[in-house]
Image (cartoon, rainbow, N blue to C red; front, side):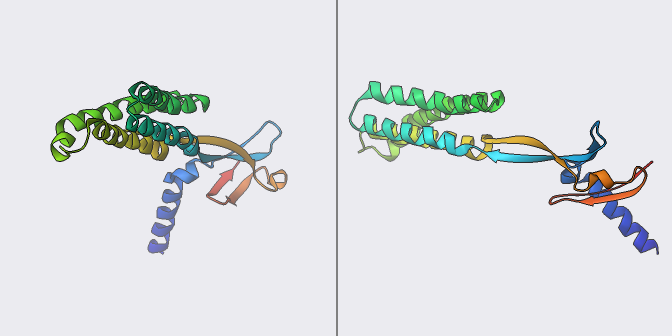
Length: 186
């Protein structure tokens, strides 16, 4: 009997502390219908890739053709493109972080070229070493942007099925696709 009581207590505590359950607490609206809030994450990193891949490709082509002004323009588009996408999704903090990484990581790659690549690849031209180093930093910035920053969370109110027939008092429970709730209403 003690084991059963302890197991029940642990299960109820785990359900109460789980983030999924906390995200699915039920409430009533003014009409008395029961609903819960469901949180969903949406990935929009493909939009960042649609900007970053062409601009990095164009940068490398311009750098290979010794067109430094054109390469600089494409790096400017690279630095501004992804933050604009975050702003369009109304996410200013990821936009700031994205802009920060899209500027500093390519510059870090350029600094790395001066310190490391010059000694590792002495027979490779300066333009090629610059392109390799800056592209390495840019790919790191794109990876951070796409895999970490490009998720937005949305909330949806979902009505509990059959909520009109839920009694006004008594023991209640419910199961959804991602959570469960148990309660007593007075």
